[in-house]
Length: 437
Ligand code: GDP
Ligand code: GDP
Image 1 (tube, rainbow, N blue to C red):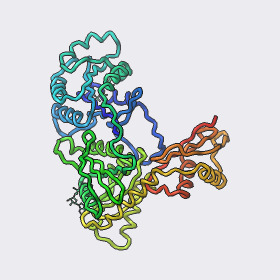
Image 2 (cartoon, rainbow, N blue to C red):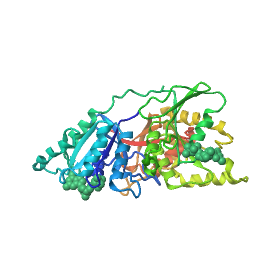
Image 3 (spheres, protein in one colour):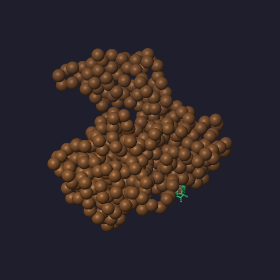
Image 4 (cartoon, rainbow, N blue to C red):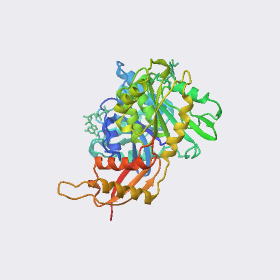
Protein backbone atom coordinates (compact mmCIF):
# COMPACT_ATOMS: atom_id res chain seq x y z
CA UNK A 1 0.00 0.00 0.00
CA UNK A 2 1.44 3.36 -0.94
CA UNK A 3 1.47 5.76 1.96
CA UNK A 4 1.00 9.45 1.27
CA UNK A 5 4.15 11.49 0.95
CA UNK A 6 4.65 14.82 2.61
CA UNK A 7 7.62 16.97 1.60
CA UNK A 8 9.11 19.83 3.57
CA UNK A 9 10.40 22.73 1.51
CA UNK A 10 11.90 26.04 2.56
CA UNK A 11 15.04 28.15 2.71
CA UNK A 12 18.04 27.03 4.75
CA UNK A 13 17.70 27.70 8.47
CA UNK A 14 13.97 28.18 8.58
CA UNK A 15 13.79 25.04 10.71
CA UNK A 16 12.99 22.22 8.25
CA UNK A 17 15.10 19.55 9.86
CA UNK A 18 13.95 20.57 13.34
CA UNK A 19 10.35 20.12 12.20
CA UNK A 20 11.18 16.88 10.41
CA UNK A 21 12.71 15.45 13.57
CA UNK A 22 9.75 16.58 15.65
CA UNK A 23 7.29 14.88 13.35
CA UNK A 24 9.32 11.73 12.96
CA UNK A 25 10.20 11.59 16.63
CA UNK A 26 12.57 9.00 17.91
CA UNK A 27 11.19 6.04 16.12
CA UNK A 28 12.59 3.01 17.76
CA UNK A 29 13.31 0.34 15.26
CA UNK A 30 12.08 -3.11 16.14
CA UNK A 31 15.19 -4.58 14.62
CA UNK A 32 18.00 -3.95 17.02
CA UNK A 33 21.72 -3.84 16.61
CA UNK A 34 21.86 -3.53 12.90
CA UNK A 35 25.47 -3.38 11.95
CA UNK A 36 26.24 -0.87 9.26
CA UNK A 37 22.78 0.59 9.10
CA UNK A 38 22.79 4.33 9.39
CA UNK A 39 20.20 6.46 7.81
CA UNK A 40 20.25 9.99 6.61
CA UNK A 41 17.48 11.85 8.18
CA UNK A 42 15.92 13.08 5.00
CA UNK A 43 13.31 10.41 4.60
CA UNK A 44 11.27 8.59 7.17
CA UNK A 45 7.88 7.24 7.87
CA UNK A 46 5.78 8.94 10.49
CA UNK A 47 2.26 8.93 11.79
CA UNK A 48 -0.17 11.49 12.91
CA UNK A 49 -3.45 10.45 14.51
CA UNK A 50 -4.66 7.69 12.22
CA UNK A 51 -2.50 8.65 9.29
CA UNK A 52 0.69 6.96 8.32
CA UNK A 53 2.76 8.80 5.81
CA UNK A 54 6.25 9.37 4.50
CA UNK A 55 8.08 12.55 5.05
CA UNK A 56 10.93 14.02 3.04
CA UNK A 57 13.16 16.88 4.12
CA UNK A 58 14.12 18.26 0.73
CA UNK A 59 16.73 20.45 2.42
CA UNK A 60 18.77 17.33 2.94
CA UNK A 61 19.13 16.85 -0.81
CA UNK A 62 21.75 19.29 -1.96
CA UNK A 63 23.04 19.70 -5.43
CA UNK A 64 26.72 20.51 -5.30
CA UNK A 65 28.00 23.93 -6.23
CA UNK A 66 24.67 25.41 -7.12
CA UNK A 67 23.66 28.86 -5.88
CA UNK A 68 20.94 29.10 -3.27
CA UNK A 69 18.16 29.99 -5.64
CA UNK A 70 18.90 27.08 -7.95
CA UNK A 71 19.04 24.72 -4.98
CA UNK A 72 15.67 25.95 -3.83
CA UNK A 73 14.20 25.46 -7.26
CA UNK A 74 15.43 21.86 -7.45
CA UNK A 75 14.13 21.10 -4.01
CA UNK A 76 10.75 22.56 -4.88
CA UNK A 77 10.62 20.52 -8.11
CA UNK A 78 11.54 17.40 -6.24
CA UNK A 79 8.76 18.02 -3.74
CA UNK A 80 6.30 18.61 -6.56
CA UNK A 81 7.32 15.38 -8.29
CA UNK A 82 7.46 13.19 -5.22
CA UNK A 83 4.94 14.49 -2.71
CA UNK A 84 1.19 14.43 -2.25
CA UNK A 85 1.28 17.40 0.06
CA UNK A 86 3.96 20.07 0.33
CA UNK A 87 4.74 21.74 3.63
CA UNK A 88 6.27 25.08 2.84
CA UNK A 89 8.16 26.47 5.81
CA UNK A 90 9.08 30.13 6.28
CA UNK A 91 10.73 31.97 9.12
CA UNK A 92 8.22 34.10 11.03
CA UNK A 93 10.96 36.14 12.64
CA UNK A 94 12.48 37.25 9.37
CA UNK A 95 9.38 37.85 7.33
CA UNK A 96 9.06 37.13 3.62
CA UNK A 97 12.24 37.07 1.57
CA UNK A 98 12.73 37.09 -2.18
CA UNK A 99 13.62 33.41 -2.07
CA UNK A 100 10.37 32.62 -0.25
CA UNK A 101 8.45 34.43 -2.96
CA UNK A 102 10.18 32.60 -5.75
CA UNK A 103 9.62 29.21 -4.15
CA UNK A 104 5.99 30.07 -3.52
CA UNK A 105 5.62 30.82 -7.23
CA UNK A 106 7.04 27.47 -8.27
CA UNK A 107 4.94 25.56 -5.77
CA UNK A 108 1.83 27.46 -6.65
CA UNK A 109 2.13 26.63 -10.32
CA UNK A 110 2.28 22.92 -9.54
CA UNK A 111 -1.27 22.72 -8.21
CA UNK A 112 -0.12 20.32 -5.50
CA UNK A 113 -1.70 21.02 -2.13
CA UNK A 114 0.52 23.30 -0.08
CA UNK A 115 0.38 23.95 3.63
CA UNK A 116 2.21 27.04 4.84
CA UNK A 117 4.03 26.79 8.16
CA UNK A 118 5.36 29.97 9.73
CA UNK A 119 8.07 28.69 12.01
CA UNK A 120 9.84 30.09 15.05
CA UNK A 121 6.58 31.38 16.50
CA UNK A 122 7.70 30.33 19.93
CA UNK A 123 5.03 32.24 21.80
CA UNK A 124 1.62 33.66 20.93
CA UNK A 125 2.78 37.27 21.26
CA UNK A 126 4.42 36.82 17.88
CA UNK A 127 1.26 35.83 16.08
CA UNK A 128 0.63 39.32 14.71
CA UNK A 129 3.52 38.61 12.34
CA UNK A 130 1.49 35.93 10.59
CA UNK A 131 -0.57 38.29 8.48
CA UNK A 132 2.14 39.35 6.10
CA UNK A 133 2.48 35.72 4.96
CA UNK A 134 -0.98 35.78 3.41
CA UNK A 135 0.63 37.80 0.64
CA UNK A 136 2.52 34.71 -0.53
CA UNK A 137 -0.79 33.72 -2.03
CA UNK A 138 -0.79 30.13 -0.86
CA UNK A 139 -3.44 30.25 1.79
CA UNK A 140 -3.62 30.38 5.52
CA UNK A 141 -0.33 30.59 7.41
CA UNK A 142 -0.06 28.22 10.37
CA UNK A 143 2.03 29.44 13.29
CA UNK A 144 4.39 26.73 14.45
CA UNK A 145 7.48 26.28 16.54
CA UNK A 146 9.60 23.34 15.54
CA UNK A 147 11.94 23.64 18.46
CA UNK A 148 9.12 23.92 21.03
CA UNK A 149 6.76 21.56 19.27
CA UNK A 150 3.97 24.12 19.16
CA UNK A 151 1.26 24.22 16.50
CA UNK A 152 2.41 21.12 14.69
CA UNK A 153 -0.82 19.31 15.48
CA UNK A 154 -3.03 21.81 13.63
CA UNK A 155 -0.46 22.03 10.87
CA UNK A 156 -0.45 18.26 10.31
CA UNK A 157 -4.24 18.12 10.56
CA UNK A 158 -4.36 20.55 7.68
CA UNK A 159 -1.78 18.55 5.70
CA UNK A 160 -3.66 15.31 6.31
CA UNK A 161 -6.83 16.81 4.82
CA UNK A 162 -5.07 16.72 1.49
CA UNK A 163 -3.84 13.15 1.65
CA UNK A 164 -5.20 11.13 -1.25
CA UNK A 165 -7.85 8.63 -0.34
CA UNK A 166 -6.30 5.22 0.00
CA UNK A 167 -7.62 2.98 -2.73
CA UNK A 168 -5.88 -0.06 -1.35
CA UNK A 169 -3.30 -2.00 -3.22
CA UNK A 170 -3.95 -2.20 -6.90
CA UNK A 171 -2.25 -5.58 -7.18
CA UNK A 172 -3.72 -8.87 -6.20
CA UNK A 173 -2.53 -10.29 -2.89
CA UNK A 174 -0.88 -13.21 -4.66
CA UNK A 175 1.11 -10.97 -6.98
CA UNK A 176 4.76 -10.86 -6.05
CA UNK A 177 5.97 -7.28 -6.11
CA UNK A 178 9.63 -7.09 -7.01
CA UNK A 179 11.91 -4.08 -6.70
CA UNK A 180 15.43 -3.83 -8.04
CA UNK A 181 17.79 -1.67 -6.08
CA UNK A 182 21.41 -0.85 -6.66
CA UNK A 183 23.59 1.90 -7.96
CA UNK A 184 23.23 3.35 -11.44
CA UNK A 185 24.73 1.14 -14.15
CA UNK A 186 24.78 -2.11 -12.22
CA UNK A 187 22.32 -3.37 -14.82
CA UNK A 188 18.89 -3.07 -13.26
CA UNK A 189 17.10 -2.14 -16.48
CA UNK A 190 18.97 -4.80 -18.42
CA UNK A 191 17.98 -7.32 -15.80
CA UNK A 192 14.33 -6.39 -16.04
CA UNK A 193 14.49 -6.69 -19.81
CA UNK A 194 16.21 -10.05 -19.52
CA UNK A 195 13.54 -11.25 -17.12
CA UNK A 196 10.76 -10.09 -19.38
CA UNK A 197 12.45 -11.67 -22.37
CA UNK A 198 12.50 -15.07 -20.74
CA UNK A 199 10.55 -17.89 -22.27
CA UNK A 200 6.91 -18.11 -21.22
CA UNK A 201 6.94 -14.67 -19.65
CA UNK A 202 3.80 -12.78 -20.55
CA UNK A 203 4.09 -9.07 -20.08
CA UNK A 204 0.79 -7.49 -19.27
CA UNK A 205 0.04 -4.34 -21.20
CA UNK A 206 -1.59 -2.61 -18.26
CA UNK A 207 0.59 0.40 -17.65
CA UNK A 208 1.55 1.30 -14.12
CA UNK A 209 -1.41 2.95 -12.56
CA UNK A 210 -0.18 4.08 -9.20
CA UNK A 211 0.69 7.66 -8.61
CA UNK A 212 3.99 8.36 -10.29
CA UNK A 213 5.16 4.81 -10.64
CA UNK A 214 5.95 2.97 -13.79
CA UNK A 215 5.34 -0.62 -12.82
CA UNK A 216 5.59 -3.60 -15.11
CA UNK A 217 3.23 -6.50 -14.42
CA UNK A 218 4.01 -9.90 -15.93
CA UNK A 219 3.12 -13.53 -15.53
CA UNK A 220 5.17 -16.68 -15.67
CA UNK A 221 3.98 -20.21 -15.00
CA UNK A 222 0.71 -18.86 -13.61
CA UNK A 223 2.46 -16.70 -11.06
CA UNK A 224 1.80 -12.96 -11.31
CA UNK A 225 4.62 -10.52 -10.66
CA UNK A 226 5.10 -6.83 -10.93
CA UNK A 227 8.39 -5.01 -11.22
CA UNK A 228 8.19 -1.85 -9.18
CA UNK A 229 9.77 1.17 -10.79
CA UNK A 230 13.04 2.34 -9.30
CA UNK A 231 15.36 5.28 -9.72
CA UNK A 232 17.76 4.78 -12.54
CA UNK A 233 15.32 2.63 -14.43
CA UNK A 234 13.45 5.65 -15.52
CA UNK A 235 15.61 8.42 -16.82
CA UNK A 236 13.78 11.69 -16.95
CA UNK A 237 16.76 13.96 -16.81
CA UNK A 238 15.87 16.20 -13.90
CA UNK A 239 18.91 17.73 -12.26
CA UNK A 240 18.14 16.42 -8.79
CA UNK A 241 17.88 12.87 -10.10
CA UNK A 242 21.62 12.68 -10.40
CA UNK A 243 22.12 13.17 -6.67
CA UNK A 244 22.92 10.17 -4.59
CA UNK A 245 20.41 11.02 -1.90
CA UNK A 246 17.61 11.25 -4.38
CA UNK A 247 18.39 7.83 -5.78
CA UNK A 248 18.44 6.48 -2.24
CA UNK A 249 15.08 8.05 -1.62
CA UNK A 250 13.58 6.49 -4.73
CA UNK A 251 14.99 3.15 -3.72
CA UNK A 252 13.49 3.39 -0.26
CA UNK A 253 10.08 4.02 -1.71
CA UNK A 254 10.43 1.14 -4.16
CA UNK A 255 11.48 -1.14 -1.30
CA UNK A 256 8.43 -0.18 0.67
CA UNK A 257 6.11 -1.03 -2.18
CA UNK A 258 7.64 -4.43 -2.79
CA UNK A 259 7.58 -7.94 -1.32
CA UNK A 260 10.90 -9.11 -2.67
CA UNK A 261 13.90 -6.84 -3.10
CA UNK A 262 16.59 -7.71 -5.61
CA UNK A 263 19.77 -6.10 -4.38
CA UNK A 264 21.74 -5.80 -7.61
CA UNK A 265 25.52 -5.65 -7.48
CA UNK A 266 27.99 -5.29 -10.28
CA UNK A 267 30.53 -8.12 -10.36
CA UNK A 268 33.06 -5.72 -11.83
CA UNK A 269 32.84 -3.19 -9.04
CA UNK A 270 32.27 -4.71 -5.65
CA UNK A 271 30.37 -3.16 -2.79
CA UNK A 272 30.25 0.39 -1.51
CA UNK A 273 28.73 2.08 1.51
CA UNK A 274 25.60 3.16 -0.33
CA UNK A 275 24.81 -0.46 -1.24
CA UNK A 276 24.95 -1.35 2.43
CA UNK A 277 22.75 1.52 3.39
CA UNK A 278 20.01 0.59 0.97
CA UNK A 279 20.27 -3.11 1.70
CA UNK A 280 20.05 -2.26 5.38
CA UNK A 281 16.81 -0.48 4.71
CA UNK A 282 15.35 -3.51 2.91
CA UNK A 283 16.25 -5.57 5.95
CA UNK A 284 14.75 -3.06 8.37
CA UNK A 285 11.61 -2.76 6.30
CA UNK A 286 11.22 -6.51 6.64
CA UNK A 287 11.27 -7.34 2.95
CA UNK A 288 12.51 -10.58 1.44
CA UNK A 289 15.87 -10.11 -0.26
CA UNK A 290 17.79 -11.81 -3.05
CA UNK A 291 21.29 -10.56 -3.74
CA UNK A 292 21.98 -10.53 -7.48
CA UNK A 293 25.51 -10.30 -8.77
CA UNK A 294 25.15 -9.09 -12.34
CA UNK A 295 27.74 -8.84 -15.14
CA UNK A 296 29.18 -12.16 -14.17
CA UNK A 297 30.16 -12.54 -17.83
CA UNK A 298 32.47 -9.54 -17.61
CA UNK A 299 35.02 -10.80 -15.15
CA UNK A 300 37.78 -13.35 -15.36
CA UNK A 301 36.93 -16.37 -13.30
CA UNK A 302 38.53 -19.46 -11.95
CA UNK A 303 37.01 -22.10 -9.73
CA UNK A 304 37.34 -19.92 -6.62
CA UNK A 305 36.00 -16.63 -7.95
CA UNK A 306 32.41 -17.22 -7.02
CA UNK A 307 33.25 -18.37 -3.53
CA UNK A 308 35.50 -15.38 -2.97
CA UNK A 309 32.88 -12.98 -4.19
CA UNK A 310 30.30 -14.61 -2.01
CA UNK A 311 32.58 -14.24 1.00
CA UNK A 312 33.04 -10.56 0.23
CA UNK A 313 29.29 -10.09 0.14
CA UNK A 314 28.81 -11.95 3.40
CA UNK A 315 31.46 -9.79 5.07
CA UNK A 316 29.81 -6.59 3.91
CA UNK A 317 26.20 -7.52 4.48
CA UNK A 318 26.36 -9.23 7.85
CA UNK A 319 22.73 -8.43 8.53
CA UNK A 320 21.64 -10.09 5.26
CA UNK A 321 23.14 -13.48 6.05
CA UNK A 322 19.80 -15.08 5.18
CA UNK A 323 19.70 -13.69 1.63
CA UNK A 324 20.53 -16.07 -1.21
CA UNK A 325 23.01 -14.88 -3.82
CA UNK A 326 22.47 -15.38 -7.55
CA UNK A 327 25.32 -14.84 -9.98
CA UNK A 328 24.14 -14.06 -13.47
CA UNK A 329 24.49 -11.98 -16.58
CA UNK A 330 21.66 -9.85 -17.84
CA UNK A 331 23.62 -9.41 -21.04
CA UNK A 332 24.27 -13.02 -22.00
CA UNK A 333 21.19 -14.19 -20.04
CA UNK A 334 23.28 -16.85 -18.42
CA UNK A 335 21.58 -18.15 -15.26
CA UNK A 336 18.80 -15.64 -15.65
CA UNK A 337 16.40 -18.56 -15.42
CA UNK A 338 17.52 -19.10 -11.82
CA UNK A 339 16.20 -15.78 -10.66
CA UNK A 340 12.41 -16.18 -10.60
CA UNK A 341 12.53 -19.58 -8.85
CA UNK A 342 14.63 -17.89 -6.18
CA UNK A 343 12.13 -15.02 -5.96
CA UNK A 344 9.29 -17.52 -5.58
CA UNK A 345 11.04 -19.36 -2.83
CA UNK A 346 11.96 -16.34 -0.73
CA UNK A 347 8.47 -14.97 -1.20
CA UNK A 348 7.01 -18.21 0.08
CA UNK A 349 9.32 -18.14 3.09
CA UNK A 350 8.42 -14.53 3.71
CA UNK A 351 4.80 -15.63 4.09
CA UNK A 352 5.40 -18.83 6.01
CA UNK A 353 3.47 -19.62 9.17
CA UNK A 354 4.81 -22.08 11.67
CA UNK A 355 2.74 -24.04 14.09
CA UNK A 356 2.81 -22.84 17.68
CA UNK A 357 3.61 -26.21 19.19
CA UNK A 358 6.55 -26.73 16.84
CA UNK A 359 7.85 -23.28 17.65
CA UNK A 360 7.60 -23.99 21.36
CA UNK A 361 9.40 -27.31 21.00
CA UNK A 362 12.24 -25.41 19.38
CA UNK A 363 12.29 -22.85 22.17
CA UNK A 364 12.31 -25.50 24.88
CA UNK A 365 15.14 -27.37 23.15
CA UNK A 366 17.09 -24.16 22.63
CA UNK A 367 16.77 -23.17 26.28
CA UNK A 368 17.82 -26.64 27.42
CA UNK A 369 20.94 -26.50 25.28
CA UNK A 370 21.86 -22.95 26.16
CA UNK A 371 20.22 -21.51 29.28
CA UNK A 372 18.63 -18.08 29.08
CA UNK A 373 20.78 -15.14 30.21
CA UNK A 374 20.64 -13.41 33.58
CA UNK A 375 21.10 -9.73 34.33
CA UNK A 376 23.64 -8.27 36.76
CA UNK A 377 21.32 -8.86 39.67
CA UNK A 378 21.07 -12.53 38.75
CA UNK A 379 17.53 -12.35 37.40
CA UNK A 380 17.07 -14.90 34.66
CA UNK A 381 15.03 -14.52 31.48
CA UNK A 382 12.08 -16.88 31.54
CA UNK A 383 10.26 -17.62 28.33
CA UNK A 384 6.74 -18.85 28.96
CA UNK A 385 5.88 -19.50 25.37
CA UNK A 386 6.14 -18.12 21.89
CA UNK A 387 3.77 -17.62 19.01
CA UNK A 388 3.91 -16.29 15.48
CA UNK A 389 1.91 -13.10 15.19
CA UNK A 390 2.55 -12.04 11.61
CA UNK A 391 3.96 -12.97 8.21
CA UNK A 392 5.88 -10.86 5.70
CA UNK A 393 8.15 -10.92 7.57
CA UNK A 394 7.51 -13.81 9.94
CA UNK A 395 7.22 -12.22 13.37
CA UNK A 396 7.32 -14.10 16.63
CA UNK A 397 6.35 -12.88 20.06
CA UNK A 398 7.89 -14.47 23.12
CA UNK A 399 6.03 -14.01 26.38
CA UNK A 400 8.64 -13.51 29.06
CA UNK A 401 9.06 -12.39 32.67
CA UNK A 402 10.90 -9.21 31.64
CA UNK A 403 11.47 -8.16 28.00
CA UNK A 404 14.64 -6.27 29.00
CA UNK A 405 16.30 -9.58 29.74
CA UNK A 406 16.16 -10.74 26.13
CA UNK A 407 19.45 -9.47 24.81
CA UNK A 408 20.62 -9.28 21.24
CA UNK A 409 22.88 -12.31 21.44
CA UNK A 410 20.21 -14.58 22.89
CA UNK A 411 17.65 -13.32 20.41
CA UNK A 412 20.14 -14.10 17.68
CA UNK A 413 20.68 -17.56 19.13
CA UNK A 414 16.93 -18.24 19.09
CA UNK A 415 16.67 -16.88 15.57
CA UNK A 416 19.35 -19.31 14.44
CA UNK A 417 17.53 -22.20 16.09
CA UNK A 418 14.30 -21.24 14.37
CA UNK A 419 16.12 -20.87 11.07
CA UNK A 420 17.75 -24.27 11.52
CA UNK A 421 14.32 -25.88 11.61
CA UNK A 422 12.40 -23.89 9.04
CA UNK A 423 13.40 -22.68 5.64
CA UNK A 424 13.46 -18.96 6.15
CA UNK A 425 15.99 -18.41 3.40
CA UNK A 426 15.67 -14.92 1.98
CA UNK A 427 13.43 -13.44 4.64
CA UNK A 428 14.22 -11.53 7.80
CA UNK A 429 12.44 -12.83 10.86
CA UNK A 430 11.53 -10.81 13.89
CA UNK A 431 11.51 -11.90 17.47
CA UNK A 432 9.78 -9.61 19.92
CA UNK A 433 9.53 -10.01 23.66
CA UNK A 434 6.39 -9.13 25.61
CA UNK A 435 5.83 -9.21 29.31
CA UNK A 436 3.64 -12.07 30.34
CA UNK A 437 0.90 -10.85 32.62
P1 GDP B 1 16.83 23.96 8.15
O1 GDP B 1 18.10 24.43 7.55
O2 GDP B 1 15.64 24.59 7.50
O3 GDP B 1 16.71 22.46 8.20
O4 GDP B 1 16.80 24.52 9.66
P2 GDP B 1 17.18 23.81 11.03
O5 GDP B 1 16.13 22.85 11.45
O6 GDP B 1 18.56 23.30 10.94
O7 GDP B 1 17.09 25.04 12.02
C1 GDP B 1 17.89 26.20 11.85
C2 GDP B 1 18.02 26.92 13.18
O8 GDP B 1 16.76 27.40 13.61
C3 GDP B 1 18.53 26.01 14.29
O9 GDP B 1 19.41 26.75 15.08
C4 GDP B 1 17.27 25.67 15.04
O10 GDP B 1 17.55 25.38 16.40
C5 GDP B 1 16.45 26.92 14.90
N1 GDP B 1 15.02 26.67 15.02
C6 GDP B 1 14.32 25.70 14.40
N2 GDP B 1 13.01 25.78 14.75
C7 GDP B 1 12.90 26.82 15.61
C8 GDP B 1 11.80 27.40 16.32
O11 GDP B 1 10.65 26.95 16.24
N3 GDP B 1 12.08 28.47 17.10
C9 GDP B 1 13.32 28.96 17.22
N4 GDP B 1 13.49 30.01 18.03
N5 GDP B 1 14.37 28.45 16.58
C10 GDP B 1 14.17 27.38 15.78
P1 GDP C 1 20.96 0.43 -14.54
O1 GDP C 1 21.40 1.87 -14.52
O2 GDP C 1 21.26 -0.24 -13.24
O3 GDP C 1 19.55 0.24 -14.98
O4 GDP C 1 21.91 -0.30 -15.61
P2 GDP C 1 21.65 -0.65 -17.14
O5 GDP C 1 20.74 -1.80 -17.26
O6 GDP C 1 21.29 0.61 -17.87
O7 GDP C 1 23.09 -1.16 -17.59
C1 GDP C 1 24.24 -0.33 -17.51
C2 GDP C 1 25.29 -0.81 -18.47
O8 GDP C 1 25.75 -2.12 -18.11
C3 GDP C 1 24.77 -0.94 -19.91
O9 GDP C 1 25.78 -0.50 -20.76
C4 GDP C 1 24.53 -2.44 -20.07
O10 GDP C 1 24.68 -2.86 -21.38
C5 GDP C 1 25.62 -3.02 -19.18
N1 GDP C 1 25.23 -4.35 -18.66
C6 GDP C 1 24.06 -4.66 -18.04
N2 GDP C 1 24.06 -5.96 -17.68
C7 GDP C 1 25.24 -6.47 -18.07
C8 GDP C 1 25.83 -7.77 -17.96
O11 GDP C 1 25.27 -8.73 -17.44
N3 GDP C 1 27.10 -7.90 -18.46
C9 GDP C 1 27.77 -6.88 -19.04
N4 GDP C 1 28.99 -7.12 -19.49
N5 GDP C 1 27.23 -5.65 -19.15
C10 GDP C 1 25.99 -5.44 -18.69
